[in-house]
Every structure is written in C-alpha cells, then in structure tokens.
Amino acid sequence: MTYSVIGNTSYVLAHTPAAMRYHGSTLAAERKKNGESDYIKKAENKSRSFEEAVKYPPNQAYIGNISPDTLQETEKPWYENLVDGGERFSDWGEIMPEDEFLGLIQISDAFDLVMLEENFVSNVKEKLAKNTVMTDELVEKLSGKDQETIKKAVEEGTAEPLYFESNLVGCVKSAHETDPNLNAHVMLENLMAKASGVLSLLHLGKQQDVNLSEIDYVMEVSEEACGDVNQRGGGNFAKAIAEVAGCTNATGADIRSFCAAPAHAMVNAAALVEAGIYEKVAIVAGGAVAKLGMNSKEHMNKDMPILEDCIAGLTILVQKNDGKNPVIVTDAIGKHNVGTGSAPQSVISAVTTEPLEKLGLSITDIDKYSVEMQNPELTQPAGGGDVPASNYKMIGALGVKKGQLEKKELATFGAKHGMPGFAPTQGHIPSGVPFVGHARRMLMNGDISKAMIIGKGSLFLGRLTNLFDGISFVMEPNKGTTSEQDGASEDEIKRIVASSLRDLADSLAHEEDKS
Image 1 (cartoon, one colour):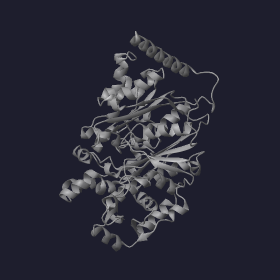
Image 2: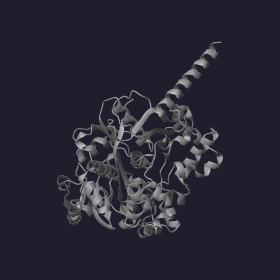
Image 3: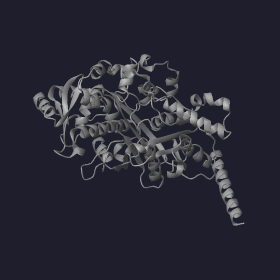
C-alpha cells in the first residue's frame, strides 16, 4: 500500500491573560455571580507576563523549540524554572502577545463585528507588519474606532469588551439582535478560535515546500460551533480559516468529536489522500476561550501563577507520499466501538493493543505513545492528576497482562515509551496530536521507528450519550518510495502473518461450529 505522509506541522499559542480574566468560563461565571470579588481582583495579580509565558518550558515544547525529552529533564515546578533564551518564534510557529492577537481577530472578522481603538490599532499595525507570516494585505485590514463608540457598545450590552493590560481597547459586537447563537459572546469565542486557526495555517505556509494555494481540503477540528438559530453548529470554520490564510484552491468542512476530533481528522485525511481524491489536506484547530483559566482558583490557592492563559492552535499537513516524510499506517486504525464500553481499560485496549495485534506488533514495539498531553502543572492542582502518566500506566499494565512486558518494567514504561504532558488544557488540542510534529522530526532523524497517536474524547459532555470516544494511528519512517514495493519489509511480513493467523483461527472456529 502507498501510504499518505505527514508533510509539515505548525503549532502556535496566543498569550491572552485579559481574555482569560474576562471571558474564560470559570472567571466569567464568577464575575457574573459575585462582581469584582476578591478572587477576580487577585486573578489580575496572578497573571503571567508575556515573557514568562514565552519562557515557560511546556510552551517552548509545544511550539517545538525544545523536545519532550528536554522537558522531562527540566526541574519542576516548570513555572519557576524558565527556559534560558526561550524564543517567541520557532520553526513551527510562535507565541503571540495579546495585543497582536486582538489585531489578528479583527483581520479574521468578515462582518465588521470587531472594533478596536484607533491608537491601539496604530501600534498593533506596526507590530504585525514585522511578523513574517503577515502579508501587507492582511495588515491593511486593520481599522480603528474612537474610544467612546467602543465604550458605548459595551455599556449598552450589545458587545463583549476586549482588554489589553487592563485597558479597554476594543469590543466584539453581537451579530444579531435576538439570535443567541450570534450574540456577542459566541461571536467572540468563534472569532478567537478562527484567528488562532488562521495563525497556525499561516505558519504552515511559511515552511519549506508548503504552498497554501496548493492545499485541496481543510478540516477544522476545534470544539466551537458556528451557525444561527436555524442551523446551530452548522459550520464552516474550515473554509472561513482557509479564506483568510489564502488557501484559494481549497474546500473543506468541520469535524467534531470533542477532544478526539483531531485524530479522527488525521485518519480521514489519510484515507482521502490514499484514495487519490485530494493530494494535500490540512487539519486545522483553533483554540478555546472558555477553557482559559479553568483551574485558576486552584492555581491561586496554591500560590501559583494562573497557567491556563494561552489560546492554542495547530495545523498538520497530510499529503501524497513523497518518499521522504513519515507515513500514517492505515492498515489498522484503533477505534473505540459503540459496544466497547466505558471502562478505562476497555477504552485503552481498543485504541492500543487491538490495532497493534492486527499489525503483528506488541506494546513495546511502539517507541513513543502520545495520548492526552495535558500539562500536569495545570491539572494536578485541581485534583485532575497527571493525565499522561495515568494513560501510560494503563498501557503498560495491558502489556504486563498480555505478557509483553515484565512487571518490574512497569515503573519505567512511561518514561521510556511516553513523555510529560506539555499542551495547554484546550480540550481537543492536547489529544495526541501535539506530539505529531515532534514524532515527525524524530522519525526523520532516526531517533525512533514507531509512534502511536491516540485521540480520546468525552462524548458524555454533550448530554446525548454516556459513551467515550477514541481513535488511534501509527506513524512510521518513510521507506523511500512513492509506489508499491516488490518486496515486503519485516513489519509488513509481521502484518501478513498476523492476518493469516487470524483468518486461520476464524476458519477453524467456523468449522468447529458446523460440526
């Protein structure tokens, strides 16, 4: 089989402490209930500076400036052991300051819903013009309004305020007088998701051998929904983002499955490319405003800075086999079936051991697993534990149960076959895919030979089903060919043997039933 490949990746963050304080779900709910409470006042003093956010080790790992192995060796707490020389920009993307991100939100706005104060626009215009991913055409979309017009819209309740360093610098207006799906808050969330997706797609276009006008299809995989009262959640973020970024020859659609959506999109993209329908498919994710500051109370209670202050975005390019880039192995895709059940062991088994057995592989044949890459410094203070470590314990325990791993090796399994979590708690963002860029780099450098990306989702959050979700795929190095090979590799032979054994077992069982 000629597999599709992962061509390039981009990962971006926007440091948005003011958006966190005013629009993150936890802090917004507190403000609505108790006004300017002590918690709200304290939150401003516990916000990080842009420089601190840039040098924060997990953020540097997310944008690719340091590896997960380097993060593993970094002393904790990470927020007290910042990266010397940590840079805003990387080969994959950047960490954008809040003022520039607010400018990008207006640039991404197609209906004149974003108003920014004229002096603020003048400063931001100058800064964005220096960013190499921003074209003159995009920067020229910025325009300013007088402060009184903005203030009036906010005071009348027809707009959501936009702050920078505690100063009112703009607002997002409602898109309809009565439709709750187009109110100012929803439009703010959607425009911020769109803008972070745009930023990641623009950074993909900056990379070597990537021409955004050659992308055929865009899939957007965030957790937001756009639509009006008659088609709530109808979409389409994908084409909206593609339009701003200049993907002139692309069509696209949104894929939703809570946290697991990016992994679903990876599998769908691989299938579309392998089938010859499209040659280049971009998976794009914007970030989630609601999840900013989710655990802020617990962070402050432990005298920590509020660490959930960044909106994330990512783009992954899946394309026709070029004989160079790592392949997505589609012979056996792990999936959580409706009948699998919700027990953690059943979920993990469905997305790890079951597909690996189809490939003739054991648990230990995978060099690196990427499951739920939530940064534990964000989740542990709130009692959420170390999510990646818990997943690695379950995978290792399955290996022991199946006799593929010695019990004494269980303690070191996570460090050897996993990595510390380094992604912000943005729902879909941590779910396996933050490691795709690192895995691509490691596979091309010969550091590893196999990686498994696992997306998991909590479908019960929608109150329509109690089911979980999960889907996984394996990444391998390219064997240097874009066509069918005459010979079979060792891995391919394993898969053929495993398939033959399954067929034989099924046949014997069938004969036994007949007799």
